[in-house]
Image (tube, rainbow, N blue to C red; front, side, top):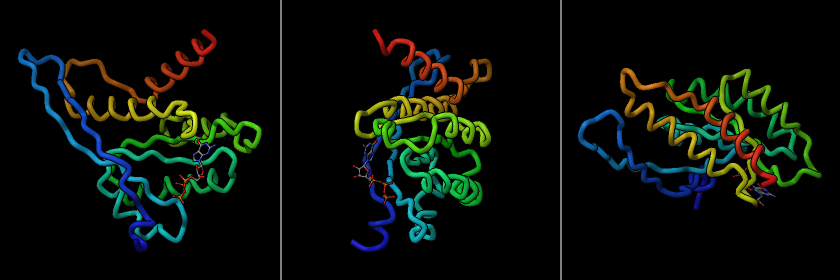
Length: 175
Ligand SMILES: Nc1nc2c(ncn2[C@@H]2O[C@H](COP(=O)(O)OP(=O)(O)OP(=O)(O)O)[C@@H](O)[C@H]2O)c(=O)[nH]1
């Protein structure tokens, strides 16, 4: 296992069932994809391009307990702008939200940065699973919308969807 294995690991495969609406006959297609976990460290930069260059979506994670991980997001966004597909779906995630006692990055700071770059934002926890499904679901809905876009179909806005679902989960979390 060399540099390439350390730079990116396959996390799993996805199967999207796409059924474009507005068709008289149901045309469902199964689209297969792959999810890769790429390394964040500087020393892998030159290698990780190869893994995200053709990606349809990128989840950009920082650690809410680690300021340098947050500070490197701007550099990643600049790099993505240079190397990734022009229409790539990007989502910013502030991970380790379960570690509130060690938090150094406020949720508002993540939101402000995301707004600046026009990307959706969520705080997540890989430990508790908080918002993990929502992040992947939002990306899947965006890609499905793009793939089957019909002329008179209402447009799907990933940022609005994430914001509405975030509100919905916080409004009902006490129930
Ligand atoms: N409490 C908590 N720990 C987490 C969470 N996500 C990851 N960790 C822990 O953080 C450590 C680093 O996780 P990794 O997934 O290796 O982090 P990474 O950013 O992918 O690291 P690189 O691959 O080196 O870029 C591990 O010990 C994980 O168990 C989380 O949401 N909450």
